[in-house]
Length: 442
Picture 1 (tube, helix red, strand yellow):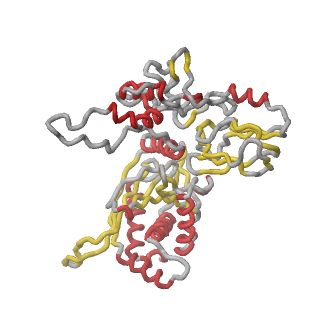
Picture 2 (cartoon, one colour):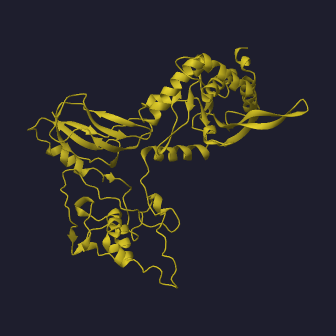
Picture 3 (cartoon, rainbow, N blue to C red):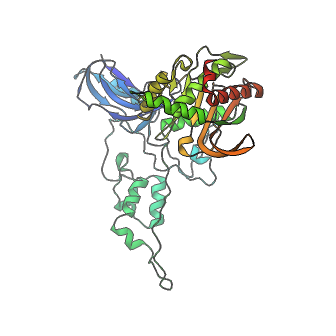
């Protein structure tokens, strides 16, 4: 019996996925449980396992395409099994998005009640650039542009660019489906020898220096699934969630001295500043459970475990792997587990349960040279701590000026859950524990 390979919902927030690559080719044998494809979700790259055995009879969606959850992307069956009915279903499904959102020509307008495309909302925006035509894998492609009533097939942006640069579309080989000419094809033609002939003569006025080559270029890049998810989450946070901010400066002398002493004794690991911050935050949250909470419609949900989100910058976005039960772990365990989570986050190898469900987050940009900043709360968490760099500063102690290592932290609070007094008390405890590390054991 034929088995469908579909774009599975691999995380609760996933609405669409990008097919990065097929691990096998049409006609290759497949056993149940084999990895057949790799998909980019809103947070990580994940493997797709075969739910049946046989051979990969048809690749319906090609690598590079972005399609909604539930879309048929391939078919596994016996070599001689009839799969025409499944292919007919695929052709009847909504259009597949390849690389970018479908482009509209300037004359086309959204239907009544239809939300405008993102590029149409910007002032003076033109049609989306070079979104390829939807195509099932069964549709043949050609290497040369296909004429439709004598008109060469090209995207609106490619057509406009060619007209502006004086390039005949008929001389360009299109790389899109059916030989459709895309913006990249026109750019490639412009970079060829003919481009130099069409370029304006340099130094024509009074022997002036030739104009320098452009250092930047106009480009519309498809948003990754992660970046789309970030955009959705930020919209859900900064608007609906009533933020307020509390900033405090911490003397880091004793904490950094303690770190040096511990690392001098450690053999199989090294404690980082961030590890100390995570441990301190976890202890402070135990003493102020109102901050380790979430707004839940008409109630406040207090959490029985401190699960810390660690903000990690990755290519194309940000992800927050979660250090579970941080309140029940020592510095050594926090150091080892957080290092593993961060490494796999950067390699995009986390599974959903490893980056979802934090109760409080810490974002540290100190290593990037940032003095202080404010962070956006990640709902349904009630707060996030933004950590700046530790730097030497002149301070007054006992009437004398001395140099101390100081750090500024800012907590963003959801005012529905955390009031100013609660947030201030938490930060006071956080500060005390860093300035007097023994306060953690009191």
